[in-house]
Image (tube, rainbow, N blue to C red):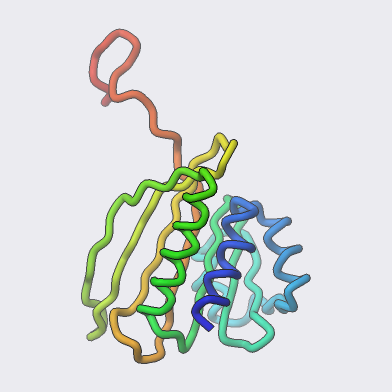
Length: 169
């Protein structure tokens, strides 16, 4: 299951760079079903943004896509270390094909009595001009729990100073 969750994230979110229509088309061809906006999960995953949430055929994974290019995969009842390992392998494969991946940070935090790994990287596909933020929040234990993989658009990294040589404010 962890490898499938990551595959859905890479094929659905990353491959389409968060573009909502291609993400939705991909999800529907994979058998995902759109969720009615009355479900509380829909509001939580969209966080007030316009978009859609779909549920996987087995009901254990939700995929949210928003009009601002954010894409989230929420996996219920998955083992955090296995999901994180599968994500690292997938990101490594993208990097080995020439994509640029720069890890921004990795830290462990405790929330609601559970230790979680928070990981963030900056990603640009081969030949691409847009940077994407890839992130995950996964538990540190093998006990089944919710795991989250996220993609968002990030502003390009610009020079640290203006053309006149003064630092940017």
